[in-house]
Amino acid sequence: MDGLLLTMAKIKSYLVASHIGPTLLVTFVTFLLAAKLWWEGPAFVIALGIFLGQLIVGWTNDLYDFRDDLRHNRLRKPLVSSDLKPAELKRAIFIVLPIALLVNITGPLGLKAGSISLLGIGIGVTYNFYLKPTALSPIAYALAFALLPAALVISTNRTPPYWLLWSGALLGMAAHFANVLKDFREDKSSGITSLPITLGRIPSRIIASGMLIAATVVLHSAKANTTVLVIGIVAGTLSIFMPRSLLFKLFMFVALLDVLLMVTATGDLIGSNSI
View 1: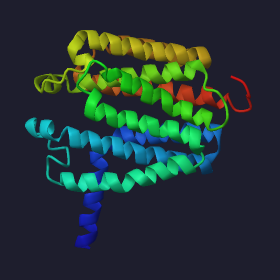
View 2 (view 1 turned 60 degrees about the horizontal axis):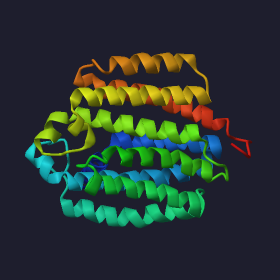
View 3 (view 1 turned 90 degrees about the vertical axis):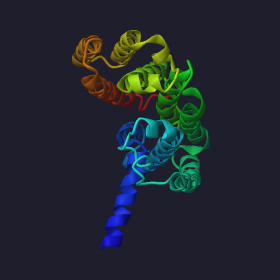
């Protein structure tokens, strides 16, 4: 019994180190989109491949941030709390990586779309190790968030519409700015010079709000929904003045509405040979 509890605690630590909230959200969105374009069977396999990729992105992020997390005493991080050792996390990455490659390339996505999906994972890892402390930090989010839905559409031998690419990129950049604002003081004190920190807190709030509103407008143009449009514009505007503790939650709420709109609009692609 004690051994089982220790194993469960270790598994929990690995999941926490993967940034389990965003990881599950991306996986769930992938499943919804894939189920619209395929059906539930292939959607589960596609979502599994994305989930494994997100594990790698999250784990490499925690490895790279380990020293900085120690400095700020972020005990919620398993590496800082010593629930996991860096060597254990590295070993997990080397175990999961070939499985992620196999599932994405040989699964329903196929070679072409699977390669695009893996490119998104590679961009996430590149962000962790190279782009995070630079002015190019939003580019990684824009590309990764645009490539994921594009890969799903390409896997069905369709061409991704421009609205899908633009809305994904805008949501990705809005998420990046909102995420940086959540830990703005700590990251700035650590000397991280990502674009949001370089621009400053207020400009970054305005940019994040603008991108979230723009994503909502683009998605509304593809699948008209006045309710989502109004909520997106109002909430995006309010986020400029929202307390930091509520800012990220508000962004996630609007982003989720946008994602549901994206899923609905993507479902309309079924049966269309030319987009």
